[in-house]
Image (cartoon, rainbow, N blue to C red; front, side):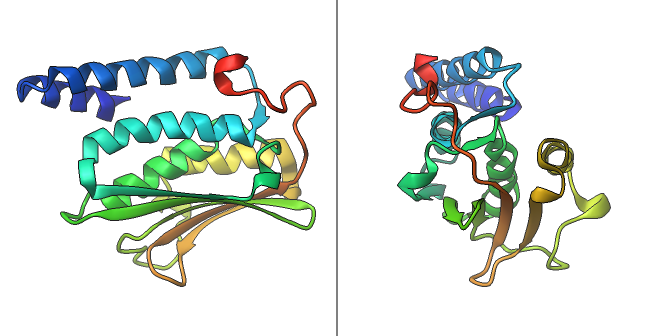
Length: 194
């Protein structure tokens, strides 16, 4: 939210009022979605992806041509239940550490796969990677610490979460949770329809 407001300020100072209004509208949409689902623990993955898509639209305005996003999700995963707002801190972290510090363009990829009885969610950036190879302990920020705690609370030992250097370079955040379909009344419903 603070980055979006900072972006609006920059756009206004540089006379880009139409784009500033666009960012404010996007921010308003994000806040509406967060408040509408404030008490919801889990949502269908497709709803989570709609939310992260709105978030990324603001980030794309902020970074212009320096941010490329790839969505790589299997269609069978779209109705799976995921913790509400699980992807946002992972994507924010990828942008903050993998894209923002560099002057050249970078990529963030979001993936979802079913592997046997589990759902694998990944967020990868092509940034410089982690100095020690694995993020954990005191090096973890509030968002990642909260993500880990939420997963333990919701799924216990059936979930795992790691942030590591990816084999292809950059950093990979990986969440593994039990694959469970969302309630039938959620399937086919977008975030704007609830």
